[in-house]
Image (cartoon, rainbow, N blue to C red; front, side, top):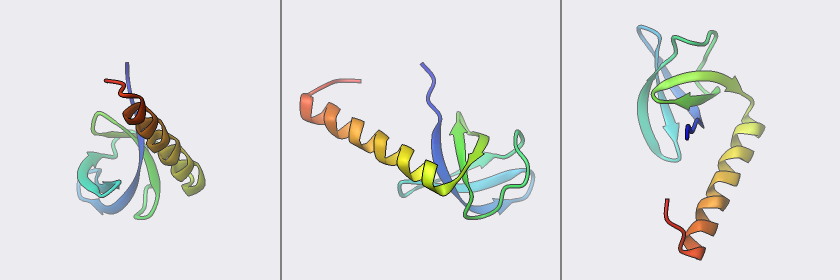
Length: 80
């Protein structure tokens, strides 16, 4: 199973790289696969690569849905 998650771009770095924030976790990713990314944009990240851009409303709704699923799993005692 593959999982791609939305994350906010904090800073664009040299060499098609960016620093992102994902729920308080910051990491460096590659921007090689998409163009025109700026700080504040939301990107979809998969295995260290931004694979698409999305608007803030959609990104926040997706993150909220993912958090709700994680809470439901924790409440039900589900294991990954």
